[in-house]
Image (tube, rainbow, N blue to C red; front, side, top):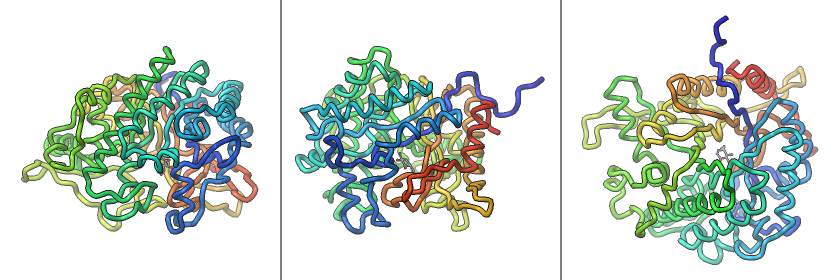
Length: 457
Ligand code: NOJ
């Protein structure tokens, strides 16, 4: 009998992902202090719905039933993040044992259900106290304070956790938060004077990543260390050699790539990035790039969409092709459906950035306009359509020899979708925020079957 189509190798890690501020709630319990997201969400006009993460999914109290539900779907891997201000309420210094105890309870519960943790140390929730003290990632000091925080967490939880991620999506908490001459619209940050200030913040975050990798390795010898990045994917309009070469070149300086994945994986800022950014490029001190490009065991690729590129007769040799108005989208303004980005992202990370370790998909998923049908179920066939299309492209990469070892759907359940509040739903499990009742959607049933058969069904 032939292998059924779209099969993954034995041991492929099927998982689901969340992040602390988006689900935990318990914003002022057991010693936690505000993060920049608490402040931002409570600033009128910042979150479109006026909502915040004070209660969110109340996962802080409901984690046991959430883990049991995850296990009932067959999910064997869970990616979540740690809240910095639960652990270090002052951002630095005194450790809050009650904060660590929460994550110990969660990890013990995961262990009881045979679910392996994949822990992200930082998913955007910088301590407000460090924002007030020195402007958070605008200061180089933040990189050192992040590494000290990482050390505390890894020392305390390193016996329970093997798979560590330093940070999630550097581009989002820097680029979207710092506005030149105007306050941030989509994420916490400040008004800055120039784009150089923003690239400098990116550089500080990357330095924090590198120092964080060192801290993890120093205190957890079995650690499998990764960075999670929403690498911007340049998709060739056609797979002609000329368009593929154009997409590969464009990749080195598409959105944040020149400041994030390229220096992390090659130890250099690409030539194209330096030429395009000119005086806005970050100021780099001797030794920084060595720290930033610490060897990684794994690369966490977050993928939602991509940018089309083709060869062009101009100085750069490529041009990006804007999406036409009628291009298909999911239920968010930025969420165009570009399944080929799933494949090309992995290809570029291997062939252009040269990553030789293991890849995992740390996030993939979509917001959909979910509703209960007449049958009382949420038949989110559009989400299944989206996920299936992307998974087939991840599979293509694997079939072509790219070492992809896991996939985490975003998200386990509907949650606080940052500046869109609770209005946008990314979960394969519905959350009713009034009752905190969780209801698996049809996509959860579909995903569970993918796991059971170890293939895209
Ligand atoms: C990426 C982020 O890591 C996550 O927090 C967010 O909810 C999803 N994208 C969807 O926007």
